[in-house]
Structure formats: C-alpha cells, structure tokens
Image (cartoon, rainbow, N blue to C red; front, side):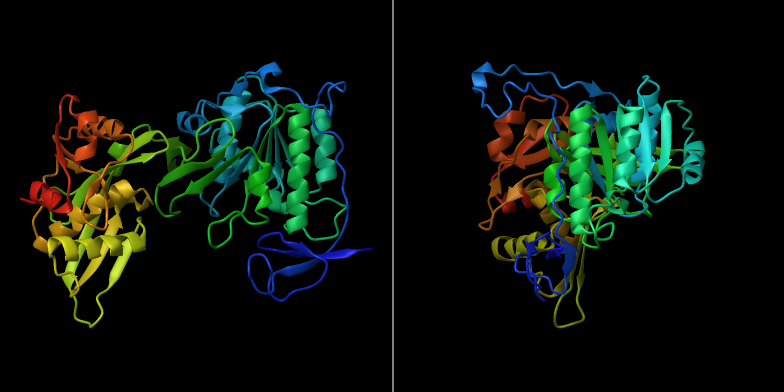
Length: 452
C-alpha cells in the first residue's frame, strides 16, 4: 500500500517525510498516512443530458434559496435570513463557549415547524444529550439522537431517516473505514466533510458541523475544510463572561462578517436585541480616560466604550498593554499624539481596554482611542453624551469612514447629544435630528473639541 505524508497544520501532502513542512514552515507536523483514493460518485441531482455541458449565464434560470427560520433573531441575522436548504455550515469556537447549546436550541424551533432533525454526536452519549436537552427545555418530538463516529453507519442512517436538518458534533471525531489514519487527522476531516457535502447537496439536507479550534483560535484540521463548506461561523467571547458573539466569516448566501450577540444563562443562549445598550451598561460618567465610539460589524452599528489609563512609569521602558484592539495600532496612535499634538507619552505606561471583552479591528476606533489616551493623560473627563469615531493617519489627519449615517443614528437612538466625526463625513450626517454633529479634520481639532 502506498503511503504519503500529510502536514497536520496546513494539509500539505508529499511522498517523503520532512522535519519542517515546506508549505507552512511548522516543525514535526508531517504524519504518515495511507494513500487511499475515495470516490463518492455524483453528488448533485442534475439533468444527465446537460451533465458536463457548460451553459450560458443568460440561459440559466435563478432559483430561490429556501430558508428555514430558526426563530432566533440573532442567528437568522448572521445566516442572512435563516438556514438555506442543502447548505453546509461549520460552527467553530473554544471549548465550552456554547456551540452545542446553540445547535440543540435550533432543534426546538426547527422541530416545531414539522422538520425532521438528526443530531449525531461523537463525543456524548444519547443520555448525556437528553440531560442537556431537558435542562434547555427541548421538547420537540422531531429530534432524533445518534451517538456514532463511523461515517458509513451515519450515511446509512441519514438515507433511512431522510432528515431536513443534520447536526454533526464534532467533525474531528468522525472517521471513514477506508482511511487508515486516526479520527481528527487531516485526511479523515477532509474526506468526512466531503462526504457530508455530497450527502447534503444530493439529498437537499441542511448540515451543521461543529469544528474544534486550535490554541490559536483557528479551526483544527486542514484549511480546505473552510473552503468546502458554504458558511463558517465562529463563536467569540470569554467563557467566564456572560455574553457570546457569533460571527460569520464566510457566507455564500449572504453578507460576511455579520455578528449576533447572545448572553449565556441557565436556560441557554438568549439573544441580545440591543447590543449597544448592553455594552454600555455600568459605564462610569465624568471620569477621565473613557470615550464612546461606534463600530460597524457587518451591517450592524454597535456602541462600545474605550478606556485608557496613563501613569508615570518607574522603569526605563514604559509598558504598553492593550485588550480588544490591535496592539500595533495603539502604538501607532501614541506616536501620532507625541509627534502631532506634543503629548510626552514616552515616560508613561499606557493601558488601553475595550470594555466587555469584545475585540474590534476597525480603523474607525482610532479617534476614540486617541481621545481616551489624551483624556487620561490630562486627567480631564469627556462629556459622557459625546460619541467620536474616525480613522487617524500618520500626519494627524482625520479620515472618513464608511456607514457614518448608521453610526450617528445609533448614537442618537441611545440618547447621545453630540457626535464628533471626520469633516469628510459631515455632509452625510448633518441632517440627522436629535443630535449635534461636529466635523473635524485633524487630531488636534478633535482633542480641542472633545477635551475642553
């Protein structure tokens, strides 16, 4: 039997062993596996007369993607309206973050619509799943449970049951007899996912698969796993915190980078319909080092608080600690404050935190980070009913950001009285009622307006 060597990190295949993977550069990740060719046959129900024959775009009739509503508003938002029939969705996240909880909650709402559901677990017995279902008050009669890891047995069960929704928890525990490697290996994960894709597309079954993540937060297994599926959802948030963020990073049927916000309670995951208000709960008023900004996640505006603490350092090298925003971006903004505004931050420790544990990489946070740092440095508080947003360049200029109208409208809805924006965005938002909008063109003007 021929063998091959497969990298456990990136999936690179070669006929000889390497101590260092030629593709990703990782050491001691090449695993020996049997080179087995697997054929799944035709996966799609198509007219055999046109099979292999290309069609002109203008002659192809569009089809409407039928969606199954989950009645969980935040999840339906992330999925752009619901579960598409015949789609393959990958759900990833840290252990204990709530992946299995959310999926079994979906079963209740989908089952109430008369849909048949098959829940396959390779990690729990059916009795354990029953205990979790009872705790979450899952009572639907259309939910079938199976504790199995052999994909051939699972395939036969799927064909006998013909479910509308299939849940696999998790893909790293599944295996095919034809492949000699252990469950969770690159070959097993890739081929099991391919078989599920063929079954889902061929039988018009919506499939959810749970994926384990590595210590770096990426889905464990080959990168091709994320290419095979139609939708990739990531759960974010600290297990000790009550809130969870479900983020769409790939969606063939809707917008990407959409988020849904949930709160973990004893009855399961509860959706937060107004995350801006939730993120600002307990915000201190009239305290230096605090600024409020608005970020756009997908199509949703979310208000968040940026906090900063600037203290004189007792060491030769000042400390820089950042949570929730990019560390290098904060260092860049500190350099801009030193060069363009004249703040002597070289002798001060700088701490910047995005409250609530949320992580945002959008450049529109620049203005709020700068205001929070300057406010703490000068020990002057910012008006608690003033919101700021905008990108800051290396020359100290304020650059325009996208969707400024949505940001200002969200601020007005939550009772903010003033909003400081880049001057280039002023014409888009000056007619919004209930809030005063001020345009600035440089970081010096920004601080003069916000920190009197």
